Length: 581
Image (tube, rainbow, N blue to C red):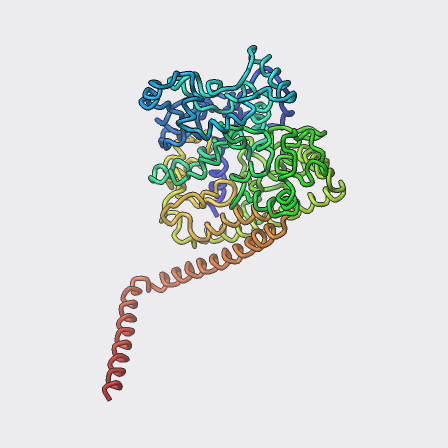
């Protein structure tokens, strides 16, 4: 068990790098959520810290990556489109020069009608092409004109991409924020509520040590799915598809579903197959998605809630582009208070005193209670407040009981590790991702002397379990790392438990049970069976060593093989004699 506490500390300390404000470690409690951003003249900053700006905002093209490991990998070319602030590279101009023989530099639309007609047609159908097409948009355009101090007859290509290809840029949230400042400031405010959030999606993608490790292994581009989904930090088109950017499109559940589906966040499945989802699928084509959410009358405009109606609601009839402000269970990956864990989860966060990783999740804190009341207020549009409160309490009970299952599974594996029965042991397999450089990269100041020394001595060859960096087992193909029992465990708590959580939260019973709870029970049974076999193998090895028979095992194998061969040969001879007779 001597390695378990250092293991837990490695998990936590590695994540320190993903803090929203590096250098603000003197803070003793996690930052409290701030009020929803109000309309203001100044566009906010996603990164107000010079270190984080250097890691994620400073433009480097494709010469280096992002985050603390930027020098360990070079990103693939597609990153210039997914993370344009940092990685965009302008075209060389050869093809553009040929086009200039027929088109003037300002004739973007005319040229692109030939080169890429699809995006031109999208733009023509957008409010950007007709910003004053009705009274509703005319008023909002006038507000933007006052901000920009100029008239907007149309929002053409140059507003977002620059005047010509020599100044070409890929727009990002701060481009959109020049006009849509309130919405962008609300989006940026997600970081004040902690992770997970969209505003820090890029950080969450590249900060983890397995991300650069896969590049060092030569298989980094297999992380395509991670990169494409985690482009949420820089681009508004993750929800508002280019070049139409229809607000009505962004109000439909499908805008969320290309990312929020599958293994670790099955929102599309659980909402889509629920009664709420079926009502939307049957009737949603008749709903008025041109109407702003604050003007929607439940039961009249929408007979069922959408993802946006629920998650963008901030209370008192108001909505925001911050979709995480009411999050309580935070994806279900942080251990909650109020439980008597038997595994090392009881020690989480393992004595580390660095925010925001120095606490367990408190779902009954004043902040969480205030969030719960907003959920009840929201649900009461269609249900009684009593029903809503009881259902949320039911969700809490489900989560606590699921954490009990995770605790049981983690204790089983920790016992295997303590007995030295993990096969192969840490010394006989590849280290934890970046394990050979982790100590030097973070230093004793962040890791602490005991953990720093342990990592240095073992070069990262430590078993790593559970929240949060134990999830590396789903992302890392090291030799013998992870082992089967570790992979079963991470699939259980990171995947199957997510189906329990999301299925229950979205009221989809089959997702909650057959794809969730039932899978959790099945994985737990496999983990316990695997642990029993590992323990028996360890006992057998120990017994053979004590009897001095380990060296004789190869000879015994040869003898048995010889006997088997003799028996087989004799049976063949007898069979042939019978055939001859």
